[in-house]
Image (cartoon, rainbow, N blue to C red; front, side, top):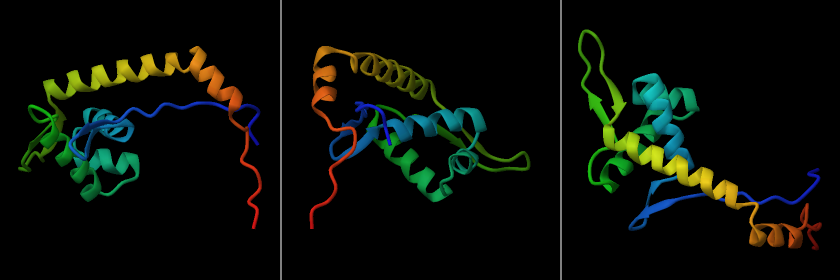
Length: 125
């Protein structure tokens, strides 16, 4: 059981109805940068290559350029990297996330936390 109510702000950026960037997509970009491929990034995050590729595809279609660049396989293998635009988007997204997390201590957030139960009431049948 939790000791106090808390507020978590989840930042999602939309392009039409598609989520162009959110916490999971940002984590995927970090994993691609670290692992050097979409499949390895997906494995590191516990998701299938297909799901990782779908998320990359949405991101690449929502911005003014691709956030992830892919390289076809060869004798030395293929791979992927976060583009310069992807690095900029990720840096701005992470900065905004940090700023919003800091704002969770503002008066409105504190007021909401004070009105929020620590645990939900038992369901009444």
